[in-house]
Length: 475
Image (cartoon, rainbow, N blue to C red; front, side):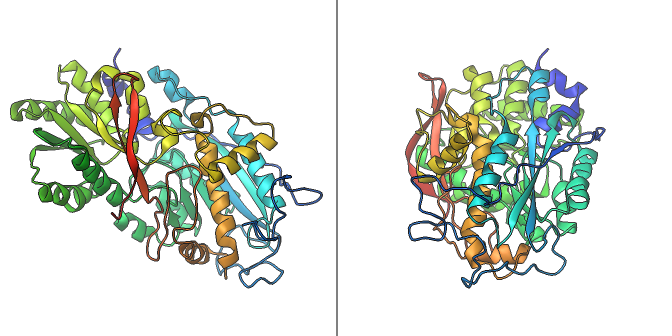
């Protein structure tokens, strides 16, 4: 049975896999664990690293504050999860194994992510913690097959009411009600989910919502258009667009995508919105788009709005004998598409922002730099070895959150969402990430992703192949 048929039967699985609205599934109690605290008692830095606080180390000594005085940075008013000695961070570990089994997908083995978190907590507590406090980390394993508004509300309540977390690191949270729930509890969010949020969305949740490693969806779509133009992908093509029916999709299409195309003299032959409310409307809208595309002679398709729309549209297109070339970004699950539909990926081109999810190591060497090496070394010191970047991709994003907080810690004047925000802004382009190509922070922005790489499908390797140097979204 093809996935398009499965979609009509289990729309909740579509929500879990694709990030659109889904049915209200029952919310089982999430599995919660507290990693070893790894207090600095007796802990020694690695032999090749200078001790924290000494010249050559970017780690402040335990208890160092923005002014260099010993003692914890004061907590802001109404800031949860902060005591005189500890600060509580919650980490969501999304388990997609049941979804993969239901759809017959294959996903990379990411090992014991709870053990990876233990290793990070121990390492960063041994080298100073956060704002003069030890980090108390709690992990929750969230089964993606249960995803829905009710499940994510329950997860938020566990983190904000039971953990009383200062901050939460989000993965796989795809429902519209999730992020406002954390905002209403004054819980700082670091989002590591490929969930499209534009600048208007970040501003609505400021200063509690950050995507420090990924770009805003405005930048992503603008960069995608620029990358496709530079690749010559539009030359001689008849372009069709499918877009998730949403305010965000309409905004970024009109404000970011169309102006870039107009400047390049490119026109859209057919524009179609896809309603993801339920399986029936979703499937019917895709079928109508295919009819419209065939009538217009469309041979290349761009998707707007994330939600893994390209993957589902390819699946539907196969049943209708429609085989255009596709534009893809990291938000369009290129790894999944290549594995499941290699015959439909001919001519695919686009941009990558998250190498661990987009390309193989022969395209982007692992480890790629000092930051990625540092994270790999932390895991190796705990006996956790990885052969490929895909095996460590979530761990790298977790590691980057710890590293970012470490880098911002000397600039903190208050431990609060606003205090962290202002401290991160001071970093500018000086923070080297492990999990993405590059970041830059500046006042008024809550998304850090700054660099992308162009890539296109290579039929010889049956993979997405990188081309050219990293490009700046601002360029």
